[in-house]
Image (tube, rainbow, N blue to C red; front, top):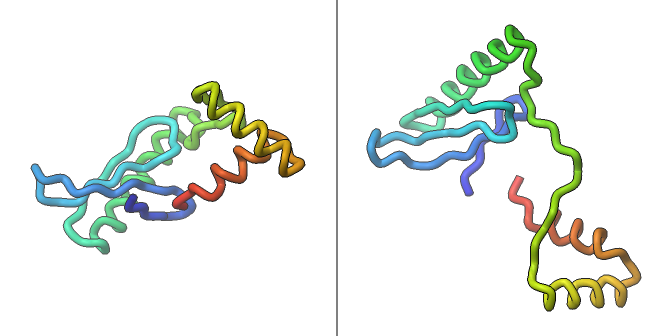
Length: 110
């Protein structure tokens, strides 16, 4: 995954064949904001502009720019996997939650 970071905000970068440009989409925000560029420098400049406009609109409308996350989410897995994970966690002397957090942390790309 191609990610770009500006001022603590992350954007996913993909190639848009229709426009023959790269498209960025800002992640983790309360709404949508995207931008286009033909080079990394142009893409970064457009990211900054798009972010500034987004943050200004949020300020004007009294909206929190970043989405809020509770730290909780449901995960549906097959019962067999659930059992294996629970046994592995118990064998390692940790909770299933701790085992899952470690696995998820290792999978991060940011």
